[in-house]
Image (cartoon, rainbow, N blue to C red; front, side):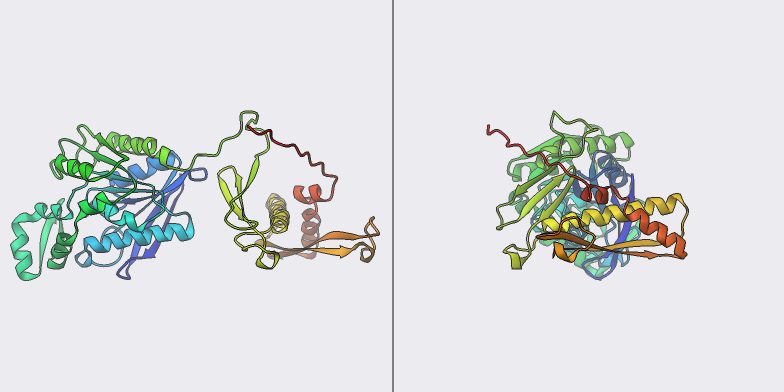
Length: 409
């Protein structure tokens, strides 16, 4: 399964390192995963959960908080509030470049962070917490014997999971201000709480408090003998399977073929009015969604391409694909092909080579740019191949359109 790695700016301006685990096919939905306190996006639990969910069709974005993993900045400058803000920015990145997350997942303090961030990510329909504390200040128990010193001096180095980290007074003050159970009570999203009864880092009583504060729909599943960090591969896989099965009812249904169609049949395209504008349409083709509309001058909202735009776009895409297939097969030095198209109406009498001599005709102008060290003969051959693309042949041959009314139920 593919993994896309990139960086995006965090709330304090530093670059955060991210990984997007993608399914082999188009994702059913996107999820955002927050790792545990002082962990990282490539930690065992985060990586295994993300990969398992991707295998089940859910793309998962995981990233390192400030000063952790491959992200820039100093851990000492991070706070619980900055982690929450970074989650919102990660969701913004998904929304801008892919699709907003429908699912939020948080492990340990990351679970508290997604509960706090959920209200600022409106597209999220479901939230999952794994071994999450009911109060962010719970983490101070990990270095309780140094709290007075940190408050007195302003900062102190503590050992967590065998590694040194600097904790500041600002961090302590920040987590003390968060009333997480109030956020849980106002969540208004489906909630799944996963917690092990024997968790000796974050006790099971935290799950009880979160569950009691939450409104329905809410669910709790015991992780039996799992440890806090889910270090056993089986436990991480079990968590991913639970999440995928539970969240399915809260995601948009997966497009399926009607019973009368087989996998060998042409993929059916369904076009429906959205009723959000005069002409706006929603086009569904398999897992893909496309908007269609008319330009403003034609009375539409210009929220998507028009019908003729889609028609000539199909010709352009097919032309480029056909040229590329031929060039690769013949090992031609074609770097890139670009096809520019325009549709218009012309008078038949202005077209000397057309059979129709009266009225108007549809004309598609197709301009093809071939980049690369091609000689004249190679360029000429590729231009000939352009006319052999299947959509070109369809548009220039006889087409039979069969229209039937669907009986009303």
